[in-house]
Image (cartoon, rainbow, N blue to C red; front, side, top):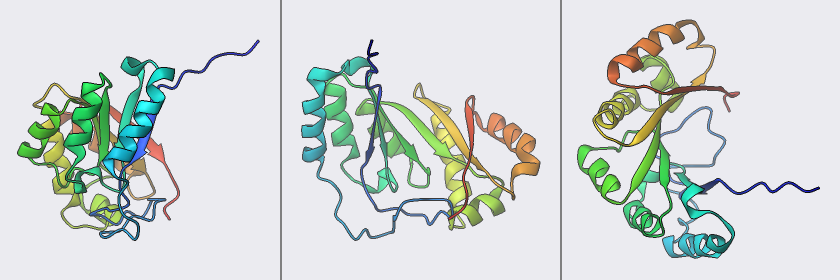
Length: 188
């Protein structure tokens, strides 16, 4: 007997552009992508083709990249997903998340977000290739902690941070985090 496995998560890598240069990233993301972003109309057309075959209320659309916040039309896509009664969220490095952008995303129906933190400032900035990355990620965490959006923090465990994860956990709690996911990956 065959068992039905309904689609519950749909990831959209919405851009190959990114404002960071993460050592562990498996993507070819750059500040300026060699390929243009997928037009939002094409993505929404693909979503509409799926709708007759899925439970739209239980299909979580996760927007990733590159860095989704480099796109100026994410709120438009989010609003269209929200209009279709589909929950949506995103994975971000947090560097571009401002109070105004967060409010705009929430008005567009944002239901979830993951922010990446890979250690203390030195180790996180080393992993992410940007001296402001740690500060931006913690700013995003503090912003999200003041909202009703479901969010979490993800950390890539590596040789530089493995010995102080307990301290990092406390720092995240102090910043308002309630959910923390750990993963490992070989730096590329």
